[in-house]
Image (cartoon, rainbow, N blue to C red):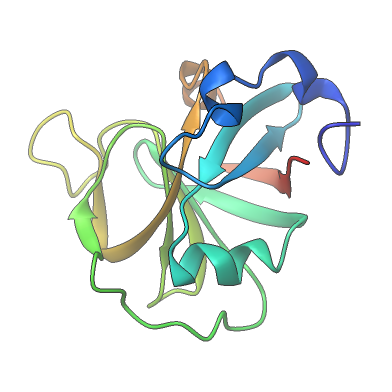
Length: 149
């Protein structure tokens, strides 16, 4: 079993995840039938969040971003690399809202096609695959994020 909650991710893990990529820990993100793989970086924020996985999060949509509270405070503040402008597929932690964020397109704060957070977020990783599947989901989702072995 690849994901801690399901074996759906087996054929989705890109080769670069196992061949010394820049990121460090492979993860699997699942919403209903949509499964995406990605990796967490080696930042302190990412490592703290990894300690919470697997994690089920009720997420709300804000433009082409989903965000949702992760329960107890993660205990990290704004990181030195915190920023508002993000990349499509980027995962982040929002210290102000103690929330996980997934960016897949422009948000109401964007001035163009780039994703933009409401305020600084700590980048924790990146999802790959068919991110357009996120655009088909509703205003509120229940998602699960788990580590891959």
